[in-house]
Length: 411
Image (tube, rainbow, N blue to C red; front, side, top):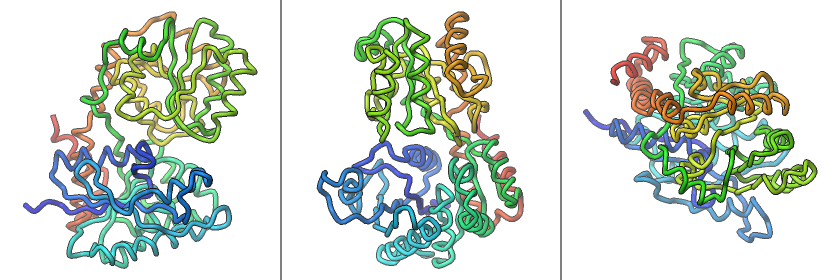
């Protein structure tokens, strides 16, 4: 049987300038390809910006992204597309599509070289993928990942485009049941939707020697870690404020973003600067050491699709305390996993940390809990749905049935 030829299309994909950007998309692709032999080409457009000088801050990083690079055996193309900040939301998908179509024509990506488009993030990426699929006469599958369904549909024009793209897709993947329910509330067709949660690489994420890890990060005593971009929805400020009521705890925050200075000021105002460290971006490969150094992970997100850091932490033996949003309750289903907060507040976090310390943790049990979320079944379900889209059989069965049947064949 010939290998399935997949075009992964998304603006959420790592590159040389942002190696952690969209790494969850890359991980699923890698795991599926390694287990099922699919041939993948990646089209990961980046916004056009003409100047590379660091004077222009984050925008200059777009200009420095190479037009083509190799990552883990995949050829990744980064064509440019026009972005109009603030005023261009409703036109974003069309502009992305035009840039992508020109790249496909230039690279010879069409029905003769590609079997199916694997798109990620509904807007603008999924809508652009729908137009691209129509232009190239290809089927496509789109994966919803969180904000694309939880927030963006509040804009009427964007909502209409999302619903149109969903109607054109062979299948729609959501990374949690909570996100599938959100998809259904929009009025989209339920038969096309399948829940396919992200997995965790149990080989890469595993416990490492704990004392060595703690020495590396210079921590003693009870240590909390929080991993996520320094943006408001991740709630790092709440975690820092909680430290004032947890005087014998230390906090390590890993992530980059615009709130760094603000979070440092919060730590100073709360009198906890000496016990709070902002580590900046930590390479994905270094996270096992960070998790292993900590006693517990905290995630104070306002919303989530499926938070990969929860599984990654648990796979390293570190339990997690998280807000009850998105797919968090689908990952934290046992005492060994950690716990869900009563609400998203400083008081709830303080209470959860104290309760956790009182009952203690079993790091081996936490690891065993994470082992139920390995990639094998996820990769099988992903490959089955892409293959069904490619051969035109998606319409014969509900998408969830296709995924579940494939996943259940994996031991």
